Image 1 (cartoon, rainbow, N blue to C red):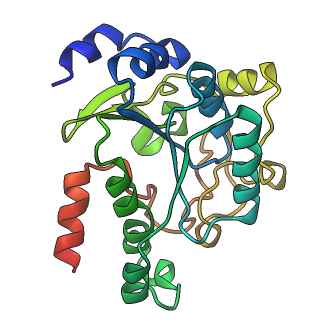
Image 2: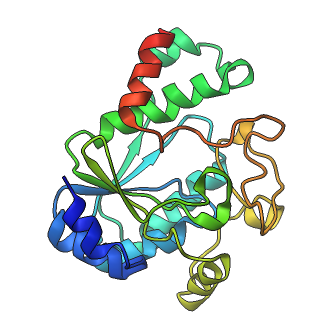
Length: 235
């Protein structure tokens, strides 16, 4: 469906890629998904420089660090974002499947599914494209992430995929953007508080996520259809 768009814009990065997609190709049908994590300020600044009214979706799992919530408020005000959409899990689902709030200890994949994957897919309904901040230098399953890819009829956009760590740091410095407060405490990648520890390196910044487990991703970057099928089989 989007082969022509991919072929035309695939060589672009950063704001050069974002601008035509936000203003022209998907105007009114595109959203940015942000964790307001360690490097989120870069992509949010790029997007705000193009259109401050671009919908920004963020998942509040109920288990975020208080520092992340404060940082979200800080960046939203600083960048003048006018359409921040804070998405939370469905109360009835949490009550049924994680009433004690301890699901992350015995089944972290299921916890991510009900607190992140399914709420995001429900929120993205109606959008033709969405933007995320994955980067190849994070390694693992992200080592060969594409800047543009079609998944289940929706275009996935990763304008920072080819950026290096040095480029990210240079951008933060150039625009004097505030860093996430947990960075100075050794958190190089920041997710939910129970599943994130202070560690990581330049070569493996996501080492602190689900430390000690084989799990490396929350699942929001999987095919939505696959996520729904997984949820149905687990029910």
